[in-house]
Length: 96
Image (cartoon, one colour):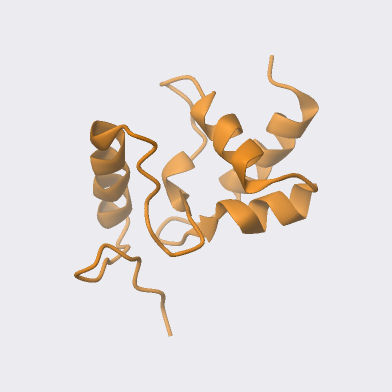
């Protein structure tokens, strides 16, 4: 069973609507931790989780690769399927 902190992070991530993103830092501020801990919490999710982890990106508006190019490609694919657009440099195009 995840820690109460991780559970809180998961509840917040589940509130991000399809087609929208937030950053590790924004989530961290809301729960009183660091962006790195948010990343650890999302990395700890089981593969069949219903937490939409793909909707969390870094503060530069990019997917954090974490050295796993297949997972990064999956994250981009999932986001694009939700209607999220990326610019030519790989940054999420935020709605006006």
